[in-house]
Length: 102
Image (cartoon, rainbow, N blue to C red; front, side, top):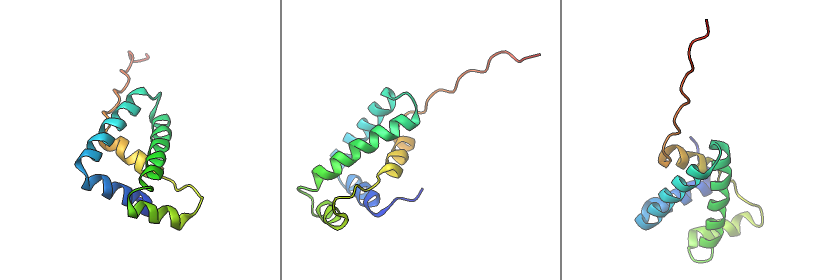
């Protein structure tokens, strides 16, 4: 999976801060458990990531610079959301196969 510049910066930041990583691992699990499917989970998680990205932009220089560089346009964090869902969310059980059709 390829992450854009902002996603990679975000991932690196979380990886360098154990308390942030624990927070996001738990957030991913909660979002995945409450979502109807993987698509809905990715959409919701991306919204959470963007809110956090803007919040961190107030205090973390690398986030602030990224926000200044892109202006008012919203950066996509969808790939990161999908990657973390695959990485940290428990897999959904597969439906059991019914009896074979004769």
